[in-house]
Image (tube, rainbow, N blue to C red; front, side):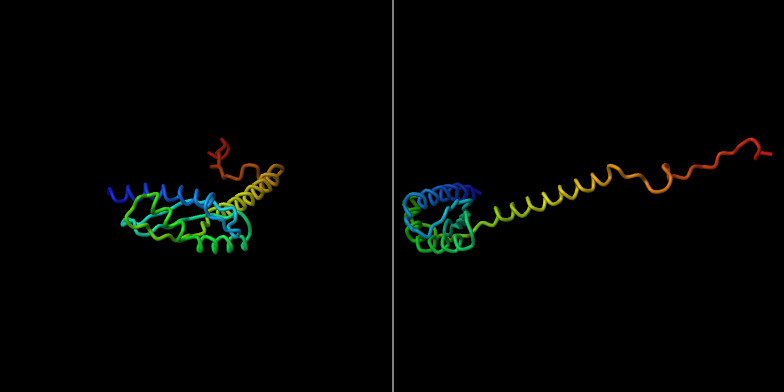
Length: 147
């Protein structure tokens, strides 16, 4: 349990360190507008997965991935120094798909809102088909029928 808590704490620190290194230290023109969204660290502290997003198109994402790959050694050594670990964790960078997924969900929600508005508009002036009260009622006996 303690190992998991330590790994989570170090992963949070790695996220911040990588973001700072990308901003200040890595001077690669291929590096786009990168946001480090998360970092996960294995319980043995040997491997770190760093998740990121890139503002831009597919080409921007590809060039940023190449820049991250070429800077991985520098980033790993700087992270290792900053964390004070005997062995710096190996780093792997992964494009985070959450923003794109969130955008698709927003589009679907907007379509649903428009469809609901159209249904509400159509229903506003609608009248029920058939009788106003379509439910059958029990036959009420009159006095004439009782004879």
